[in-house]
Length: 190
Length: 86
Image (cartoon, rainbow over all chains, first blue to last red; front, side, top):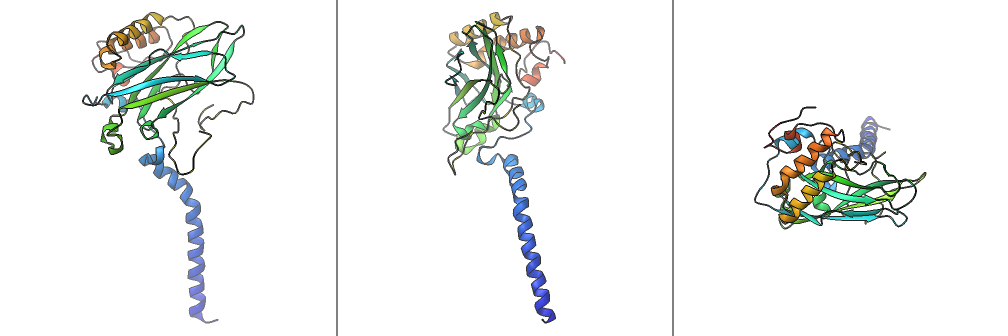
């Protein structure tokens, strides 16, 4: 084999290895890209208290947030929202309440997850504090009110896809926490 | 979410910034919650007109140890009179 052919072969082999390596690196790189630019509905990491402090309310947009409550079929709690909707501005923090009552004679542990529709708007919905993803225990015949403290990111108004969106629906679903229960929970939940 | 239609956007829930509210088993702050609900009902569910009531509720929670104390500006209340520090 001549020198020219050998070096060409080496180049091609090196190119092959590079392409192989890039396809492996693409997975974490793509994830970082998606999180940085909130592409495809992934939420931004790093929403923090400082952002809330500097947030400016956008007073010329009013958004209606409707509240929905569901329980899994086997979950016995009476779970309902205390208000059907709240009208607020992007950048304004708001409080909403749900009420849950345990009608059983035994303590029941529940765990909840939530959903926001439309999906595209979900990335702007930020919860400062709520009651989701952690086990909550209700004693027999106990009723508690559960608050959700949230805001809609002011960057909502800069998104062209959100021009015609004036209603969001926040939906919580409670499941009973049991050993070995597989929930549609995200990775970070306990 | 378990059922994801291929190619369609889906919603990924995110954790709350400050975690979970402990349950108010004794209903210590129920009065403030009811005041807030009343305010919402009177004002046609407008949040901007009921900010004082929501701040009172959160203040009750902080006093009763049901919420970590936080400065009001960090919670989005810029017009508060007395900021509580952690």
